Structure formats: structure tokens, C-alpha cells
Amino acid sequence: MVSRERTGPADDAIGDGLGIENLIILSRADPIICGHSTETRNLADAAIGSGVARVHVVSYPLDVLEESELPLKPRESVAAYGPGIEVDRPAPVGDYKLLDGRLGYGISGHLVDLLVRLPGRTAVMNLYIVPHGQMVMQAVETYRHLTGGKSPATIAEAVGSDITNVVGNAVATGRYGAAAIVLQNYLAHDLPVAVSHFTLELIVAAGQRVDERLGTCFAKELAERVRVSYPAIDTAAYLQPALTESELTDRLARRGLARDGYVLFLSRLTKAKGVDDLIQAYRASAVYGRLPLAICGTGPAESALRQIAGGDQSILFFNDVGDLDKLALMAGCHAYCLPSKPQPEFTETFGIAVAEAMLSGGIGPVITTRTGGIPEATGDHCLYHRAGDVPDLTARLNELAGMSTAARVAISQRARDYCLRFDRATILANLLGPACLRAAA
Image 1: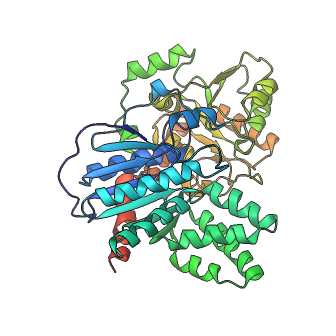
Image 2: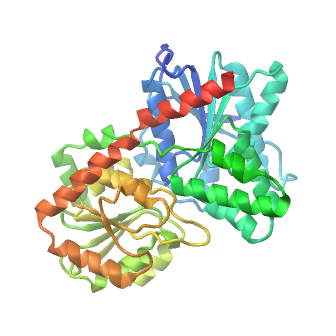
Image 3: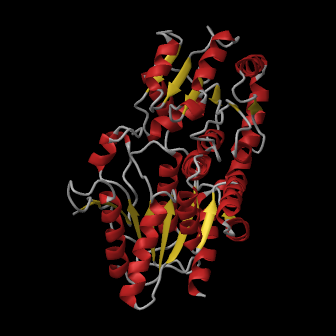
């Protein structure tokens, strides 16, 4: 059984520039709080806007998401996907005797059904190569057998947790076979891409370590074939915001906030995001007592962070932020802080939230670190502090407190101009052109 969210009829036009009629995206889609969930929506909308006739977003059943530990948006706050986009949530296949793999089996089988049914050229893209890459290539191999060799174009996007978590942990614990499976699957796609140059370097380094142990040649092929493709962002949503000034003011007021009157953190609440450092630095800074700190998001560290805050009335927690609230919060803040720091389980490999904050057009600059791929998201149009260094973060907050409005506006405008390069239409065209050409060869 497949749960399917229908969003309206598609335009019958075919994107001549992209050369495909159907796009299938396999990802952890809304309502999961994750930049790549937003990226999925952006790519789907861009495909329809470019003339692709049909887009299917394939993801997980809602009850499975609700039972997981993944941070979720309030379902009522999630906007419907646009016309022409269907969200498919295949049910698991099998019963309790299968200890694992029921979801993957259901998703792979559904992908085969889609490939058989959809007419014309099809591209399949997966965000997160673990486990989505395995699901896609299993389906593609089956489809090739059924059709005598016919194949869709395949794109695999490696994100932070693929490398710093899955491959990195496999190598660190001596499980080189597991790392080799991931890398081999990644290279089996027509177009393997990484979300930043930093991520690409991590991938090649992981391949080198596997090569040294297993006598393989992953590093060379990875360096030659993997392209950098930054996450796709809907820049128009920030340049032509869906909220009027009065609506923005009203949304902030509902949370006891005012434009230019709070410091903002908005992302997942995990150890790697450095929110504990931010709370300490904020309390020691000149901003404390003048402006509240709004911490927005959910995640495994939420309870611990609330304990660190200790009921401080200047530190506000919001775990019910929807898409329009995010726009309002980012556009209205005095400063946006993402004090990300590398951890064994995760290192920021791009920083989608940073780019979104910069595109928001508010007068608040971004304060962040040079961790991982964040500088590729910021273009250095921000205030940096050393990752994990609380006194240095305090110094940046104090610097912010002494800045004029004009100086803050100038930084924010340069940042916004820089981040226009991540527009979803440009990213999609760069992805689908090479993938389709390779598949046709």
C-alpha cells in the first residue's frame, strides 16, 4: 500500500532544456526538520517550473516518522507540495519475521513500479546515499532486467551524515567492507554529487583509506567523477517573501518577539550545532539583558539545552516552527547564530540554514564558525568565531552589540547577494543536464 499525497494536475509541457519528462526524488521529506527536506521540495518545484511533466517525491510513512527520533515540524504548519508533485509514502513489505529492511524493500519495489508506469525519460535522484542509494540502485537493476537494459538517469547526492557518520564511523571502527559498499553504490550512479568541496574532500579521503586497506581504487574514481552541487534553495521565497511586513510583525508578536529585537538560533537541536556554547556566550555578552535569545527547533539535545538554560526568562525555546514562521524569524532577527562545531557523528558539510538566513534580507548578520563547508555557504560575509570557543563567541556578540545598523545592513546585503548562486533552478539544470547525457551515452 502506498500513501500518496496528490497536489493537482501537472502541466503537460516537457522540459526541453532538461530533456526529461519525469523526476523521482527519494529523500527524507517533510515534515522532517532538515535542510535536505527543504531541498527536496525546492528541486521538485524547480522541475515543474522547468517543464518536467511529473515529479514523484518518495519518502517514509508518516507513522514511521512520528515513531522515530527525527525532529519533525508540526504537520499543520507544512505547506502542500505544488501542482504536478505527488508525495508517495510506500508501506513496509513483509511482517515481524523480517528484523530489518522492510521499509527499504517497500520503497525499492515502489520505485520499480514507478519506473515501469511512467512514460518517457526519467531521472531518479536520491538525497542521502545511505540508505537511499541502495534502494535506488536495487530498483534500477531490477528495472533494467525487466526492460532488457532500459535505464533511467540516476543522481546520488552525498550529504554530511553519509560521510562523517556512516562512512567515517565504518572506517574508524575497521569495518572497511561497509565503507566500500557505500562508496561502490555511490559510484554506480550516473552522476555522484557532493554538497560542497569540503564534502568532496572527505569522500576522496575516505576512499583513500579504504584503498589502503582493501587494495581498491576508489579515491581516483571519486576524485574524477564526483561533482560539487550545492543544495538547492528557493531564493524567490526570500527575495519576494510570502509575508507582508504586518504579517511578519504579527507572527513575531505571537511569540513575544519584535523585529530586530532578538538573537536567533534556528536549526536542529544536536550537540554538533553548538547551542550549549551559544547559551553560555550569550549570558556573558553585552547582548544579555537587552535582547532575548530565541532557540528554535527540536532534536535529541532539546531537554539538555533546556536544563542548561535553567528557566532563564531571556532564553526562549520554540519547537513548533513552521515554514512561514521560519521566514519571519530569520528576516526579523538582530542576528542569526549557528555556532556549529565538529563532532564524531556529524560535521556541518554546507550549512543550508546559514544560506537561508543570509537570503532572508533582514538587518541581522550571521554569526557562525568555519566548521566544514560553512564558509562555502557564507562566502565569508558574516562574523566568524572559533568553533567550540565560548569566549570568542562572546566577543562576536559584543562586537555585534557595538555595530551600527548601517554596518549590519551592509554585511547582510553582501551575504544575500552572494547566496543567490544557490538558486534552485540553476542547481537543478546543472544536475539534470550531465546526468541525462551520461545515461544516454
